[in-house]
Every structure is written in structure tokens, then in C-alpha cells.
Image (cartoon, rainbow, N blue to C red):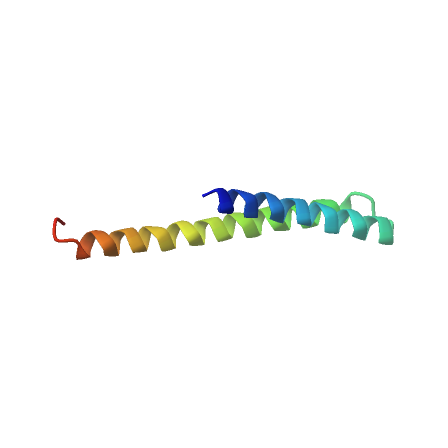
Length: 69
């Protein structure tokens, strides 16, 4: 779980850095920071949902295969 949290934070910080440098280079002050940060947030949430679904499927398969279930 710590890896997921670090990946989430790293993605947002990476989006912030890329957006900041694009804004500095192109002179479009808050535009690319916001676009990149929100894009990173959307991607991170999407990845978190995908991981949660995968872990839930694995948990259900494990429960169905267990002799107690």
C-alpha cells in the first residue's frame, strides 16, 4: 500500500514539474500546471481503481478456491 501512495504522490509531483517547466518555456503561466496536475490526478485515480478491482478479483478467487469457503 505504501507503494501505491508513493506512486500516486509521485505522479502528481511529476505532473506539477512538467507543467511548471512547460509554462516557463511557453509563457502560459497557470495553464499547463493545471492541465498536467489534473491529468496526473485522473491517471492516478484510474490506476488506483484498476488495482482495487484486480485485488478484489484475486481475493474472491482465493475465497472460492479455499476449502473453508
